[in-house]
Amino acid sequence: MPKRTGLSGARVGDSAASLAVKGFLAAIESDDSLFGVAQPLAGPSTEESPSGRVCFGDIVLEFRQAELNANRSLHFLLIEKLIELLKEAGSAETLDATLCLTQGSTSVGTAAGAARSQEKPNQKELALWIRLAAKGDSPEQAVLRWGLGLAHIQQALLFTSRHLRLHLALTGG
Image: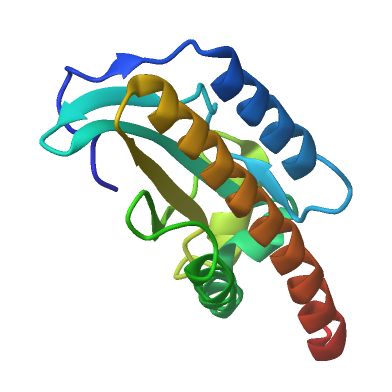
């Protein structure tokens, strides 16, 4: 997972960003979602770029059902569906979402996680890492666009949750 680019990025305390994060977290924690936030989502940071301001933030999600976190094919289906949905959302000139599968964190340091890893030593738990970046002429514009991008990701995740539930029901997984 790439590190944030430099220490120069200032944390944005904007109310628009805070509202976007609160709405996103409420939707992800709802019964409609298969996912849970694996790392705190503090909100976006901003930094100067040659083309204006860039506002960016990282989101790390895991399946709520721990046994699904080791299911590689389900994660690839998740990525495929999100790419399909997000490709049409927003503006390619101003919004950018990077999706990556990374090692999950649910089993670290827990007895249940240790028991699971002994049962299936070759299966690693995965998490979905998303970096959302938005460009704007001003910091305010970049933050507003980031919030809009977060809403697109939220809707794509909720739609994908329904899609994956159907997939799991049909495959018995």
